[in-house]
Length: 146
Length: 239
Length: 53
Image 1: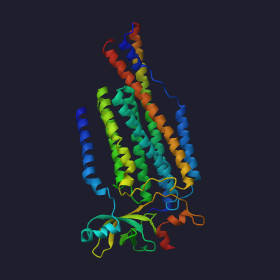
Image 2 (image 1 turned 180 degrees about the horizontal axis):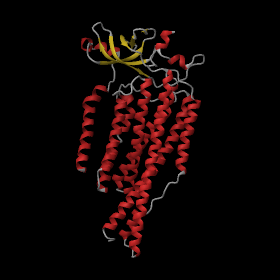
Image 3 (image 1 turned 30 degrees about the vertical axis):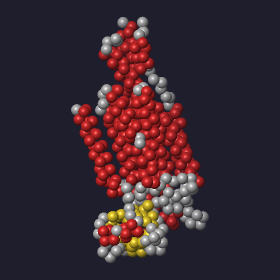
Image 4 (image 1 turned 135 degrees about the vertical axis):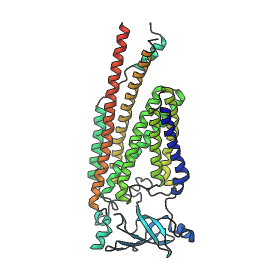
């Protein structure tokens, strides 16, 4: 009985490791591609599920609060890519923030996102005198309805 | 007449010392004080506002996970080298405490990730390797629970503990080696001084808790082992 | 949608989970320690009884 437990437990652990080494982790060691890397794939990068990461290009965010339609540009400094998403983004989403979007490149070359994640830097600083934190991280929805 | 084997058995069956309650009060009091200080003194962060305050529990929990498994590594190796029962029991105690902190780190990371990143979980290298570390030490504890022979238990778990702890540097370096959603570690250069002190105090307080936990767990393990030795001696009819 | 107001819920959740785990593990130690001590005293007493016979 105990022997069966040990063998079963060992099998589960080995299976998890095998999956991580050869499946899941292999794919996720590079969690996202930059616009430059995705564009370098050419047609191979079109229509396949992929994650795109970079910085929200300042001034590129267009948000329609009625249709929950969100458009912005992701840049890695070298190349950039337009992203289309629906639904309210995470509260930390804003101009200049790091983001990772899940989805696929459409035929028009616009990235159709099914998921939007904010990638925070390792810097933690309070807002400078004169601006309040609340102003900086309030949601886009609030911004657009002002 | 006391034979030499009886003498060694008396050492094995002696009542282990017991840590009083004051270390518990001191360490838990330190956590309360450190949390109160950090929450009350740190200003809202520019990007994430007061969510930054989750750092004071998530980051020290992760550090204590690493430290606990370092203790497992040291005492597992020492057991394999000297074959002393106490080293095995210390390693096992640290593994249980480390697994607890590892589970806490994962839960706190999820609670922080949902509002900050927008997702509870992603399979990036940092999160995945931290989950693997947790599974290794759950496996370590299961191995001990299901092995009866004390020597076999000690040998197998020392091997698993020593090899499993090698995953600690992988977890730590994952954010530098691979491209992840999780950010790289903060340093005093990237952390405002108003957050640094609170983080340090919370780390020290949780370190006290970790030491208290491992010590208490080790005392219990010795007590249980002493009972086993006495039962064995009784079964052998006092030979 | 997650707003600044609901951030407080996540912060409270994080500190609550922390204390549940810390106190929960302490409780496990107290219970396990009590059991181990009782076992020890019982067997130690049996042993001293046998020795004195």
